[in-house]
Length: 190
Image (cartoon, rainbow, N blue to C red):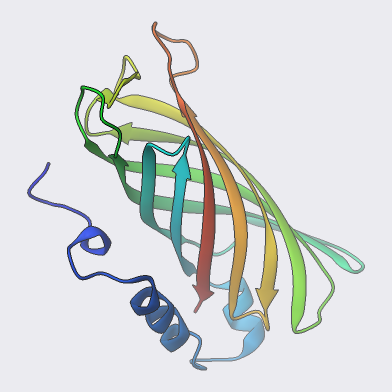
């Protein structure tokens, strides 16, 4: 798997380049309401305990279910994610792994203003390219994931937020070190 590294982690990649790519995707390709209900893409960058890093992309699909409670709106959306984890510590063990997963996200947002707050909760399953990373032993390549996020949507075209994610095997095998990540999420709807 090492020969298929995530493009974002190649030498010369910069965070400003990611912002420029996301800014380009905010250009109008349709009506605002269609963009809000359609698919989106997100860049996720974060860390866990200082020695572990994650960078990834996710493809968010349109809602499978939605509800309207006055100013409050809710939807359930499927998502596919692909990311690269890196261990930067001095200890033994592999220094990277790739991850692919699927998530069901419950999105709740308030109002119809150009800037509107949102909150998300998600559950998913993931497949890691290996079962160890640095000093962490996940025991299995198959992992469950839980996600919580808060942020702001921008004119229904994009969003920025903070996300907490936990990956573990849910004690299906021991040891179950798991990993807890704090991340920044930047995304665009199209």
